[in-house]
Image (cartoon, rainbow, N blue to C red; front, side, top):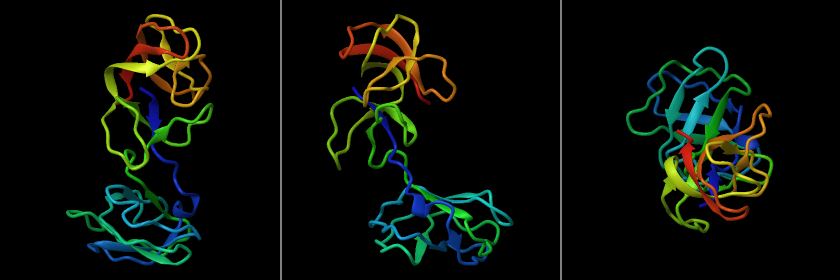
Length: 193
């Protein structure tokens, strides 16, 4: 399969300004930048409080309507969640993060733009559900000369793995178990969780 990552975060939904929110509230109003939110885009994702008093918490997000962006967006917290410590109206202090398994994409060539989540067990088209493996043996598209037992990551071809080179920040996907020729599928012991 191909190596997958979460969708990239939306810059206008990161480090935004909330309205003052009391402890025990089950919604948080956030003024977003000028990028729209589709209905349920953040459902099963997270609202994080990033700065100052009342911050350092992560809350689950429930089902929500669409929002045009550039205005206050009322973020409903998931069942069982409520604001732990009052949130002040501090600029650039809260962020919205999608569920990492929502709208996954092949890891782009050379630059990872999200969190590595696993390997697709079959080709997935947009909006389709499927199994994503993150640990254990998997057949994975390989590029370059893979060596039995070596680490792979270092993605330079979208959705594939190749030998790691030891460069700081390089992604680690797993260890090669069975080697196939380049641009074919080798067996890799995945170590993504």
